[in-house]
Length: 261
Image (cartoon, one colour):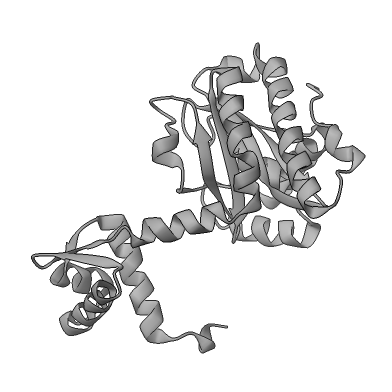
């Protein structure tokens, strides 16, 4: 696969990613950061500017809002996002906690929508960021319901991370998640943040997950049963919308997700 890649395109995307990470940059900084000649870095930055994807502020380049436009187009064209937006807002209001909608892509997790207010877990800051798929309740809920071959790909790739569970231990945890219908995160991804997540499945397709998060461990103890009830209700509504749009229905197994054991 790598033999078919276009070198100039790879360089351009490396520059875009560097700009997203570093913020406004000059030609010299881009060249040093990516080990490019200044002329090469300059040509790519000028290309981005010419097509409206970068803004040149007196020799310092930043990514333009064209990327925001593209991201919004990607998000709004996803049936799962449209189907879950209202449910996520209602879930946050009912639980008085932070509610999330997440998807899996290329073995990573992204929160594509969030609602609620929490200074340490703010949707405005985390929506659109990649997160660990094996250390989050949202991610584990998705993983536990993926087809076996897809799950194997992700688990094997994640096993190279220093802080990851062994593939054997992770698979055991995911089997437990699958049997009870929901996943729990007790500060594994963000210290001091607890979460519960459930998969959203329609037409035998895993669209993503909904989850609820809180800085209080009461979420996974005293408040767990009530949270599970609200979460299951939200997931049901989203699955009904997705299933009706695809002309399909959910399987009986999808109803088995609120058992606290």
